[in-house]
Length: 279
Image (cartoon, rainbow, N blue to C red; front, top):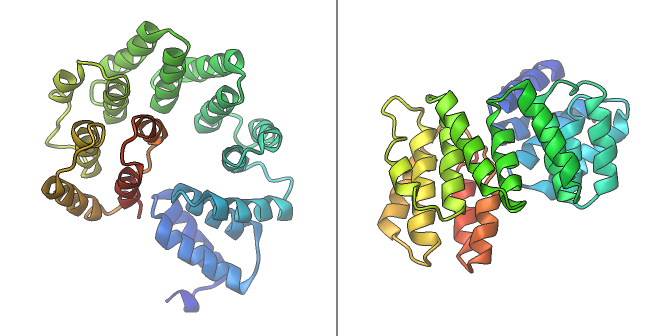
């Protein structure tokens, strides 16, 4: 089928799949394009897919090539910067974040909030707080920035403000499942005794298929991985539910991974679970 499609049609289909988080299939199409002819668009698309699938080394190879072929490109430059920072190339990351925010990503809240996270990881916490606050002035319910800013506030010794920020987002938008998951994750990360009570309020019979899968992932992490235990039957049931999902669940699990490593838990088992959410 793909062999009979012209390159522009393959690129559109790959971009469409990438937009719907179907990264494995989109990556196959980008690779088929690169066999035919090298292009910045195909390298960028493949690089982003690989990054979303947590293969950041391969992602950087393709993103480096994409921006070498088209150095004036600003679309997607914030994602390139994000992958650069994961490889410790902080000066390069800073340059590409600034390039992105001066161009195509100027009003992109993902780009702005990831720039804040970059500044935080670079040790510029005061600047990071300012950028997070700017994002939340633009959209007080932008849940990813709420989560990251709350975790920074917690580390800065301001747990009351952190918790209130997350809880206020839940109360402001009671149907927002991302806000609920972020607050639940915060309770999990901080070992808060409210976890069971809040967890009992967030089940929803009309939720999309991925939502109960993530809730059960959190529960299994709390009840088994953090305690050094395992429940093979429960894990198998969760794996079957995760495998049945039609699309990827792309979520930042890094803080949970770090906590598990700190506690001496089975990080590889956890990573296998997270990887099952990727399509």
